[in-house]
Image 1 (tube, rainbow, N blue to C red):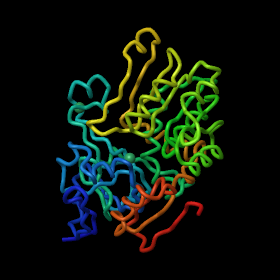
Image 2: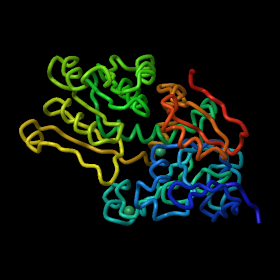
Image 3: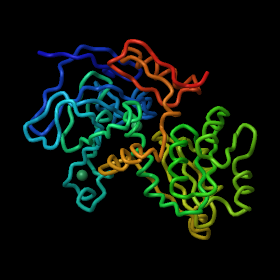
Image 4: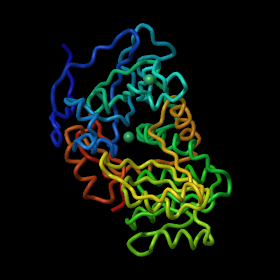
Length: 355
Ligand SMILES: [Zn+2]
Ligand SMILES: [Zn+2]
């Protein structure tokens, strides 16, 4: 039997590098050789046991932000060949529940995502349904292609937020938030304001796309947003941190009739305090976005192909598969690290961030 190296989460706070069988594909699947798999905030959640429904899937090989090449094709696959460079829609909605049938597959009652609920990509190979595969355009580098999944998540939120041209957008959080800010600018938002506590990240946001940045260590973010929007408040506030406090701030800085787009994931037991009267007399709105799905993948690849967004400043480091657990912990401690790519095909780490 052919085997491969895989990082298996055997219990919270414990990855084991194991030699496991290479997945066997069915006629409707393809086998993919993994080049890169990015570490997501949700991988930390799985690692620490923060998300109960993911802990229920242990032992599990996590990792869902991935790029690779096709190694083997199932009989029924069409339009694909061995060696194709591909990105993969990780979503597997059931297709038959109430939500799926009314066109809300992300809310499927039996929603599964590869690398979150099903074995994923912190390994040498992964099997996926061929219909979930998208071919990566030649001009998109391997590293950029590894950013497609987080970009689809940002895109899905951007589409749902429906920011109109000329409207103000505040993004709270300058990690993936920088990608949200790029998308807001692409949609014609003005001004685009990014809030964070990290000066380096704010400088990056300013350089790439932000009109204004607010460092919460120096300035009260609510007062500053009110000042920058002539006392009105922001048309849209996208929360990309995932804490009760920043959600509360989002509702305080959004204008009457404005919309808070919820993106940052809190713990199951986090609660925010909101005054219901704000929804009635101030007509404030809230929307959420769980992930990218379906043609978000095609759209993300198109935006990368035509260089409408640039994820490279957010990719901070590439590490070998063996260093997954070390890197997961480093991300918590080193604010220079935004996106870290894990590769089973390299033996040494590459630092991409500016020292
Ligand atoms: Zn992710
Ligand atoms: Zn369903």
